[in-house]
Amino acid sequence: MTYRMIAAAALAGSTIFASQAGAVEIEYWQYVYDTRVKAMDQLIASFQEANPDITVKQVTFPYADYQTRIVAANMAGQAPDVMQLFYGWADKFIEGGLIQPLPEEAFPTAEIEAEFFPIVSAMQRDGKYYGLPTAVRSLALFYNKKLLDEAGVAPPTNLDELVAVAKATAKADAGGNLETVGITMDPAGQDHHWWREVLDRQMGGAPYNEDYTQVTYADEAGANALGFYLGLARDEKVTQLGFMDEGQAAFKAGRAALTIDGTFRLGSFGEITDFEWAVTELPANAAGERSNYASYFANAIGAKTEGEELEASIKFLQYVSSPEAMKIWLEVVGELPARRSAALTDENLANPIYAPFLKGLEYAHTTRFVDEAGQRQVAIDMINRVMLEDQPIPDALAEAAAAEQKIIDDAAK
Image: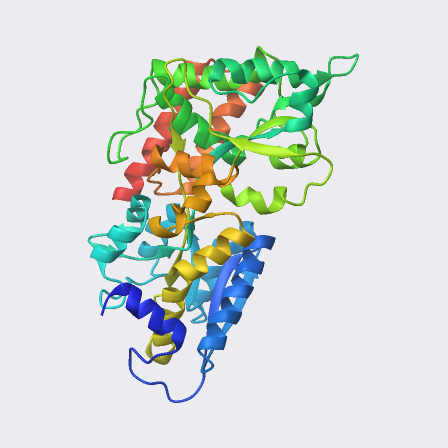
């Protein structure tokens, strides 16, 4: 029986594994993000309708507390049966005994790799998959059509045009204080990915070696990439570090002409009513070369889940990684289906919002984090040292590379 047949049977309520002796309840945990919670509510309702003997309880926590809560619950013997995790947390969750490998008979490796986008391999260790995504996301350039029209400029297609558009749309008061930024500057958001996997490569470099075990961005290309990014604030004066705290907040308020963000922001930006916005691919370099960053949150089964709960969890994970679930997730959250067949439809490819993100997946890189939060913080600290302490860019890069290399090396011990 194929993976697709098993998933369909799970949704239909067929008994693939040992029959259950009565109703069973399982818990699904994810962090709080409004559209994601709404989407999961819909998926749970559909799954329970087809599987009346299984109840799924959704539990959510603030993002900042989420990992800590899972660790504490696991230690107390109260861990979730199915949980969401960022792909970059995989090593920590596996080594911490928080998740278990997916059973091959229910999730055949060959079918996973044939049907999902290749970035799913970031959840594989030693030939075993530890989780599957419902959706994947890439980056794109969001733009405020009103601000661009007022400035008489078109959406940028390359980095030089991006600077020109940002300069044309940035607005300052009489004292020179920015009231509207030409482009947001949010290192803690998606900008650290833009610098690492996009700008560095467009400048002729590579942030890491092929298997992501060595940091390689402390070179001329890395310096040029960081110089371009920070130059938007320091030289061009079209943006400001910490403007309105978050880039997405500035864009939603109509006070940013451009922002780089992911598909997960579509649901939130869909609430904007004061102006019309649109999406285009990330700008190319002068030679027309593009790069992107792709990522995802996976769903995994808790390490201590067994018996009836394990059987129910397998069924639930099969459903939330099915094409039907992916369609709902796309409609509610805006994140792209993780299966090629569900994502690369004629309808999606013709959609002016989805198409730039789908194109981005074709040339995207997925950073193999060993400690996503720690490695992100290294980039944030590097940027702050240059912006706030005026540390020379080469020195900041060298310090960051050494700090990140230590994180990678420590994880390998």
